[in-house]
Amino acid sequence: VQKNTDPDQELGGGQPGDTREIRFSYDGTDYSILVPQEETSFNGIAAAINEFAGEDVTASVINAGTEASPEYRLVVAGNDTGADFALENFSHSIEGLPQATEIEAQNAQVVLDGITIERSTNVFSDVLAGVSFTVQKETDQETTFTVNVSTERTTENVQSFVDAYNGVIDFIAQQNSYSEDSGAGGPLFGDSALDTVRSAISGALFNVDLGTVQADTEGFSTLGLIGVNLGADGRLSIDQAKFDAKLGENQEAVEALFSDSENGLLVLLDQAIDGIVESSTNPINDEQLAGVFERRRDRVNDAIRRFDANIERLEFNLGKTEESLIARFANLESLVNGLNAQGSFLTSGLIPSNG
Image 1 (tube, rainbow, N blue to C red):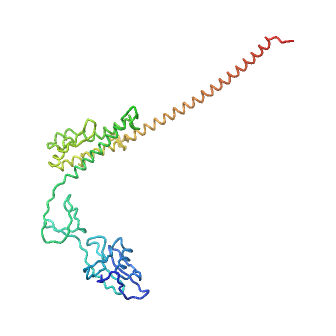
Image 2: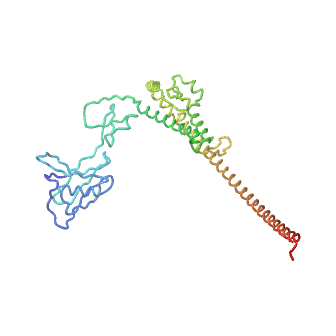
Image 3: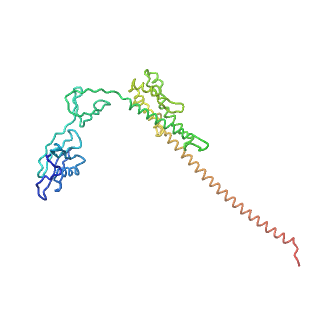
């Protein structure tokens, strides 16, 4: 906005009560900022703008000169970049501060294979599939770059998949473990739901259609073919040399084995998990079929209801038994009292009196 040798120097002019206002438009919004009378330096004006409109624009004071001969300028810029976010119609009523010089907002522009492409930022992330590049400066020279396929991300993702699968298998094994010292390994010990879960997720990964395998002439239709092996303990492991070789041969085929939208292992695994935790509809008669967890919950609730009914019946029987015993005890006590009375009478009749 203005050259000045001291960013804290008062601009001068103005009288008490004068209105000091800065106006501009940005992203469809008109701003009107009142600058306090005591804030008439570059730094003070910048602080007032940032306090009022700091979420949308940023005011700063820069030195356009040198350390020995400084030339400070007040700069107001939008926080968003690109031609759609131009700061316009800048004006003010601060005495001593000249009108601003507006710099036209522009998009970043590149020419790729003869095609001009613009973006609002310097980052071009959606021009080439899977490639992101950043432009740094304007140049008339042609720049050539080569794109190489990176296998590191795919390897990391497959390793994460293997770790997650093994985590489920380890949990099931721990729950089903037993020792004489500590007893059952967990509250789900012996629960058939664990076997159902293990069968469902392993089936989704390894019950591959025979026709698919027979049609696979390159060796990318099963986990074992790409180097992900199933051990005797039910856990997965990666044969790194074989896996790297298959990635180098055809990375897209390896990724498709997991992520194909119809037959990818992740899709099949997701369907298997849905069958475990969610209800489904029988395609034959539209009957609602409960998921494994729901069926298990219903069975547990049924068992609880049976236990409650048995407890109630036993408590009733115990009450009746108690009443019967009390009545029998009362009768027995009455009988004993009668026998005692008869015994006393007989005793008094058999013993002669002294006289």
